[in-house]
Length: 269
Length: 344
Ligand SMILES: Cc1cc2nc3c(=O)[nH]c(=O)nc-3n(C[C@H](O)[C@H](O)[C@H](O)COP(=O)(O)OP(=O)(O)OC[C@H]3O[C@@H](n4cnc5c(N)ncnc54)[C@H](O)[C@@H]3O)c2cc1C
Image (tube, helix red, strand yellow):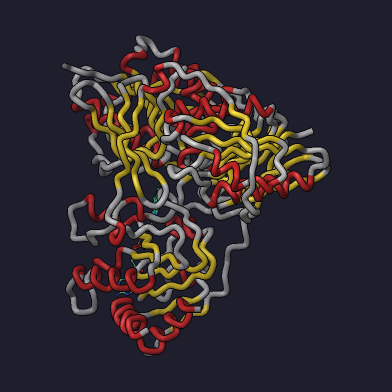
């Protein structure tokens, strides 16, 4: 039986993790200081979802991958220059905020609408992918909300592995407590999968793929519909960076025996 | 007036996990601070009777249950249906649950279904002027925000280990069974099993006193110009066996595996700590051969006392990220530590 999938991957930008982030309060709620100046990355777990989607599409000819992103247009364009060189995909964009203090229910509402409006959407082949949590909100709320809006009843979170079975079923391994995986079998699409790290290394940049993607990316960015996320009913009273500096005692030039004894005493305390 | 519902799933043996009692502990504190608030408990699982007895002394006005073989396993469609029915039946405005993999997967969807909102990874709750506030972390544990919401039901999923557990004597209790009608589509997914390494090879131990982190330095060329990966492997294994510590890793070390380099055979991405890894809770942490860069140390947010062994006196740990940094060869130190531990 030849199987093909329509894989929609949801993912957007997050600040470069090496940057120092400072919260500020604005009339519209909290934000990051100089948020629009910060260098950004493609959200890492969503990145794994995208690589897994491309891998799946490659194994099942006739499959299609569409990246759907809600983020500030200019920032999306920046990250697409790099992520767009990794794997082939089609692209649909929504121009709006992608920061950590946005409301995931509203983000999900906008994304679900964009997915439902994709031309030629075929639910019987539809897999919606994304990262299981963003590196911004870290909530793990968006994908289930999308599933509810699209009426999809099979949702998996913390996915590290997806296998397509000969009968068209899906075998999925999800992270559970204690460093274990739960393995489930789903009858087939439609399904929503929130990916953890998966099993694939980051693909090498391929300028040819980049050029092909850019032909679709630029017009999609130009067409990006502006989206407002008002954060209705949500009030932040404070956002603080914790006092994180400890008084580090640096032990240098001490004999190994002394260090070892001190560590053992500390472990046993 | 708020109606607080504590939602929990029962374990395969019918008991309640300690994390569920932490959610109940948080709910009791909330109830005490909210005059007139009602407390209810909603249990789902194959059987709920024993779990209900265990919370008999909690003072809950009603204990509701959804039970049956369909609810034994962790599956989105049936877990969401059970949580939806329990929330509706209780008329809950605030729903508290522990952040287990099972609850984290289904509750955000249930919130969407009921027109409510969900906050996950909540680490503290408070009440001021009759309003409930929750705190949680943003940008991978870099900053903590406190917020309140107008929407109800509001699902508050608390991080395991962040709340004091409720305890009380078991007793008889009447469970109100809530009926859930499932369509066939809710059974499109079947759970076929749990994949885990053999118990003695399991290096992730959430309940351990100590987190032991291995960094990429263990696989790098040492003073003699050679790598010593097999010895590193033995030293780390022995240390874990002697201390029952949980094993964490830096990203660089787990990524080496994907690049085909010699690495520690018992490590996987599940061990990774940090920005794109885990943020475990342990009273103590010992980092070895790891540079302590910010994307790694954000995963140490909930580690109490922190010590590190690195050859580099200017590594991240030296800059206020550890309580003690030993500038030393981790091979030599761990060899000696293991010897002392083995002596007892
Ligand atoms: C988007 C993004 C996400 C990331 N997410 C994560 C994440 O989740 N987790 C994570 O860990 N990193 C993450 N990183 C990577 C992070 O920035 C660092 O590159 C990584 O943590 C470095 O790992 P390391 O300290 O083990 O290795 P290295 O930087 O190679 O450091 C090795 C250390 O070992 C020491 N050493 C060597 N030999 C010995 C010896 N014999 N005794 C004692 N010390 C010795 C060296 O002095 C050095 O300090 C991320 C980066 C990015 C860009």
